[in-house]
Length: 580
Ligand code: HEM
Ligand code: SF4
Image (cartoon, rainbow, N blue to C red; front, top):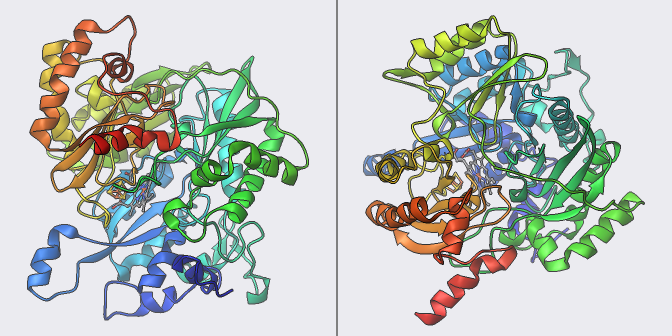
C-alpha cells in the first residue's frame, strides 16, 4: 500500500518479503563491512544491529578508511534462563567471534559486541546449535519476555518463567527468513531435529501481518514483593497474584516505556497503567489480543510516538481496555491488591524451600570479562563446567547461579575467590547501579555510560562513607542518550547523556519502581554532579525519617516535585523554560 504519510520503515517492512530484504546478498558482499541502510532496519528483527567502533572513527576517517563496522548480536532468553552448557557455548562464542566479553542486558538477554560481517553466519549458527536464537531480540515485535529472576526460587517464580516462555513463543514472528538467512534454511526443533522447510507461498504472519508492529513491544512478569523486572517501564506487564504459594492470576499493566527525545515535549517516559486482572489460562491469549490492538491502533507515521504508551495516552485507557475486551469476548477482572518493595536484586546466597542454594552475583553493568585480579569470565566458565543447576540473568544486569546443592556451594565460592570475584559490590549505591552500553558501540550515544558510571560511583562513595550511607540501597542509573535503555527515569538518581561529558540529572523516582523521577539539573559534568549530590546525600543521612528512601526524601525536602505519569514528566521543565 502506497501511503506517503506512513513512516519509511513501514515501507521497508512491507517490501521486505517477511524480513528478508537483501540481507543475504548484503552478507555475501565482501567489498564492505556494512550492509545497506534498509537491511540494517530489517536485521534488527533478527536480533542484530549494525554498529561501528566510534573510538576509531577519527583515525579511520583520516586514513580514508570506511568505519570499523561490526555487529551487536542479542540473544533471546525468555526469563534469562540458561543452562551451564549454554553458558559455556556463549562464552566460547564471545571469545571466538566477539570482543571477548559477554554483556548481560537490562532485559535479561545476552549481547555480543564486535562481530564482523564475515563471522555473522557462523556466530548465529553457533548460537542456534546451543538451542538459543536471536529472533525478535530487537525490531518492531514483541522482544525478549522478562520474568522475575530465578524460576527455582518458588512455585510462583516457576509459573512466571513458564508464562514468559509461552508468551515469547506465541508472539514469535513466523517468517522462515531467519532460518533461511542465517542457518541456510535448516530449522531445528527443540530436540535439535531438522524441521521441514516452508514453501514461499505458505509464508504469513498471523499475528503481526506484513508490517509487524509500529514499534518495539516489551513484556514482563513480576512476582511481588520484588519488582526486579521494573514492570512499570514496559508495554505489557503481569503481576503474579499468589495465594498459598500458588499463582491464582495476574494483574495486567499496559503502556509503560522509557524512551524520549531531548527537547521534544510530546515524547516522554511513562509508567504503565493497571488494565485489569486475568486468570493464568487467559494470560497468553490476552498478550496476543493486546499486541493486535497496538498493531492496528499504533502510530505508523511518527516512530517517536509509536509505542503503546502513546496509543494509550492518546486514545485513553478505557477505550483501549474496551477494545481488548471486545477482541477477547470477555471482560477483564478488577486488579487485586499487591505490594512491591524494590526493583533491586538480593545479592548473595539465598536458600529456597527445597533446600537448594542460589547465588545472586553482582556484575557491574552486566559486563562479563576478565580484568587483572578479577577474572570474572574465567570464574564463571569454571563454575559452568561443574554446575548442574542453571544460570539466570536478572533484569538488573546481574546473574543468579541457581539450584546449587549444599555440596557444590563451597566449590562455587572457591572458584569465585580463586579469581578475585567478590559476589557483592563495594557500596549500596554500586549494588543498585545500572548503565547502558553507549560508547564506543552504540550509534545513538551522546555521552559515555558503561565506561563512566563506575567512576562517578567511586567519587560518590567517598561522600557516602562520610555520611554513613555506604551500605544503604540507593538506585542510580545512567544512559548515554535519552532512549533510556538502562531505565534511568525510574532511578532515584538518573543521569542521561546530552553531550560528551554532560548529563541531565533526574531525581526522585520511587524505590519500588512505581514513580518516575524528575529533571533537577541540566548539562552537568562530573564535578557538578558530585557537587549537587553531596549536600543532598548528607542531608538525607541526617534528616531522613524512619525507612525513608532517598527518592522520597528529595521530594519531601523540596528538591523536585513528584511525577505521576505521562507528559507530566515535563511539566517542571516547561515551567523552567518559561521562567528563564
Ligand atoms: C527508544 C529508543 C531506543 C533505541 C533506538 C534503542 C537502541 C539501542 C541500541 C542501538 C542498543 C545497542 C547498544 C550497544 O550494545 O552497543 C541498545 C541496547 C539496549 N537497549 Fe535500547 N534503545 C531504545 C530504548 C530502550 C529502552 C527504553 C530499553 C529498556 C527499557 C532498552 C533496552 C536495551 C537493552 C537491554 C540494551 C542492551 C544493553 C544494556 O543492557 O544496556 N532500549 N538499545
Ligand atoms: S540509552 Fe542510548 S546510548 Fe544507551 S544503549 Fe540505549 S540507545 Fe545507546
